Length: 269
Image 1 (cartoon, helix red, strand yellow):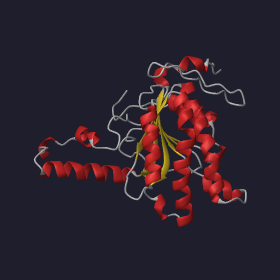
Image 2 (cartoon, helix red, strand yellow; image 1 turned 135 degrees about the vertical axis):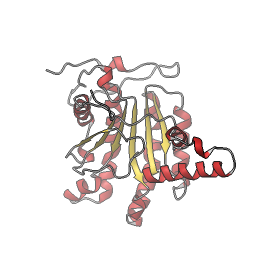
Image 3 (cartoon, helix red, strand yellow; image 1 turned 90 degrees about the vertical axis):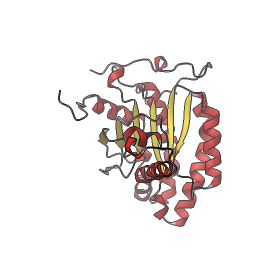
């Protein structure tokens, strides 16, 4: 039997101001009751299956992306209800530039507009919005909206949503290595003292905690170059649901699966 709890207990003041609690799910579903130590602190979400969802319905691929906007908001509210403190959403990868020019243009404009439309709601919920990804090639208007959202929500403490836009795990590590090499060449770093902690300091978001749960709907069984440094010891949950049909109940199901895993981090229990 799964116990239920009042989601209002998960909503705390943010930066000294009141924040609104998450909206209830239309079905009336409530999050499972899990001890805090069994709730993943950081969930990495691969938002996959938008194009297939649209094609199955005879719609343009963009229709799947459009439906995903409300899905992401529902997932954020589900994170707050169950107690997830960090959510990283894979919105546009460094490999997505290979898609058709029309789809890339749509995704650039869509990401920009979603951030603009939803930032006030995020702020009301006490969500801190962050951005991880490369600046080159990314539309200036997208960067502007991400920076405005970051500034508006920088003091929020209920949870952190990292929008990974023009992001790739290998690119992030390569960029960190390049900056470390530059500092070694300039005499600012001793190469003999470069270790894992050094690399971590030069990643896109140095204060981002390691990923506990990597969640991918859509039936695909791979991480697709997402947060590969941070997810070194993540638990993976793959679901068949395409992302436009995903909601917080799928997130909670994944959290229950996570809670049943035996995490040893290379050791023996």
